[in-house]
Length: 189
Image (cartoon, rainbow, N blue to C red; front, side):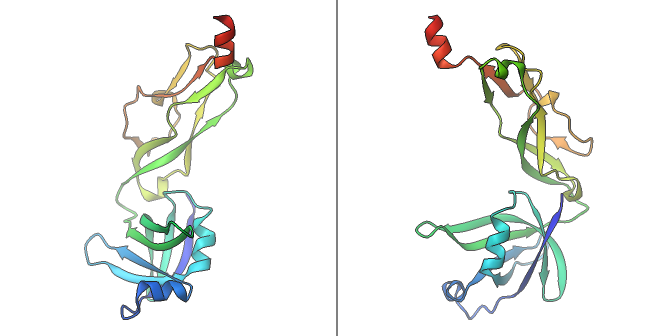
């Protein structure tokens, strides 16, 4: 997984968060595993452009005044009225410690059953995994070419994953299946 570099500076806590937002600065908090949190801020527009294209578990390299650290998004707050970011929390990650993440499942190939006008039913959209930050995939793909009729299913155990990635869900869970469209089912009834 590629890392995205962000520039930030230590936040002057005498300035309120709403005043920072008015001056187009985004307040952040970076949580450290073994010490207290640090408040930082950065240019709102720079981060907004980046935040719109990243996935949930993207690793950021955050450059704060004195050094670079790897972080992931812990939580963020949106303004409901204007759909803008109000605040964001990061947590520092240790490159030598495994992290738990939820990555997107992407279907690949084509199913013979879907070509016959049946409908693909994707039961799972994401997969909970555990791995080192360097081994964290952006997404995992599932081959749906095995779906040949409505009794065919694809399970988590059918997915091809790196041996560096540990799956944290039951291997027998169904990822995808096919169903007969309602219009076909109603016509045959």
